[in-house]
Amino acid sequence: MQLTDYKGIWVFAEHRNGRISDITFELLAKAKELSDKNDEGVVAILLARDAGDMSQKLLNRGGDRVIVVESDHLKEYKAITCAKVLEALVDKYRPSILLFGATSMGKDLAPRVMAKLRTGLTADCMDLDIDGDGLLIQTKPSYGGNIMCKILCPTRRPQMATIRPKVFSQLEEMENPKGEIVIENISVEPENDYEILEHVAYETEGVKIEEAEIVVVAGRGVSSKDDMKMIEDLAKELHGAIAVTRPLVDAEWYDPSIQVGASGKTIKPKLIVNIGVSGAIQYNVGMQNAKNIVSINKSPKAPIFSISHYGIVGDYKRIVPLLTEEIKKTRSQ
Image (cartoon, rainbow, N blue to C red; front, side, top):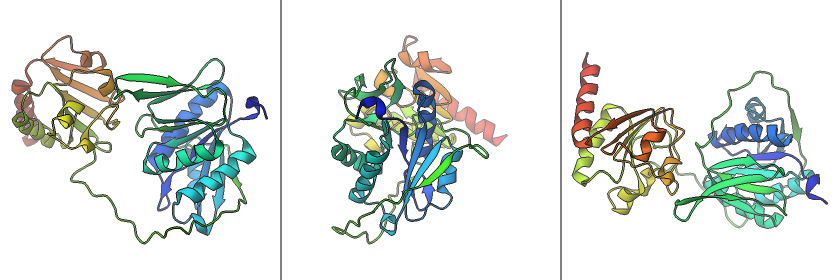
């Protein structure tokens, strides 16, 4: 079979407890954009015990088609079971592109599917595009986030990638979209090597930075750990979350769970306040899609100002307390 016989942009529909994950809707939106360049349909792949209304929601958010496999053996996510089902679907339909979220589930499942299909996989992508020959351009950070690589898979299909959450924006939900739901009768084998006894939610204090609407980020320019108290006070007054760049994690001031950037998390809040952040590319890729970017830096030539909507040139030690007091006054009025 020729490479040109492979058609279609597939998105694996990740879901838990009957709720489709946001990353799935983000990937559907990007897939729709890519389909305008290669003229291939967008297909969501839904594996579940009971699809319920999830199939329609996938159509409402950009899917041209939803392929559904239902089975009691898909009640719980099990990687080997899902990988076998995806292998059978790919063998039947021959998609050219297969996308997963770079989540715990996607990172677990995608490499297994890649191995079964003997194709390539680019992990942890920050962007996708189609080149002049119709190949998928997969952009990802490498060498500790110091460079952004563009990767192609010219000789194997499907072209596979996992993509970070919060990189792409979701499409608005459509009413009565055109599309079809296909129920596939695929044999689903149980995975009996282990049994899931219970699910335990991972709990964190406060709002996760990737879910926060307001984030205050401290960078290398913060000269003392003691100064973090004033920055945390600002975040508290803004009802926002605190985050940091990699140097402060390397200094063991904070846990990696609140690191923003190519080697940390990607966030897209309504407001981000950068304090002492220079604006290196490996940081910018993790927050450049924020709706409002405010930056404070003592150097007027700091690269962060090139992507900021508002910039303040000056010493954060003077500016941050003044901002905090002004916010307190405003709230008390």
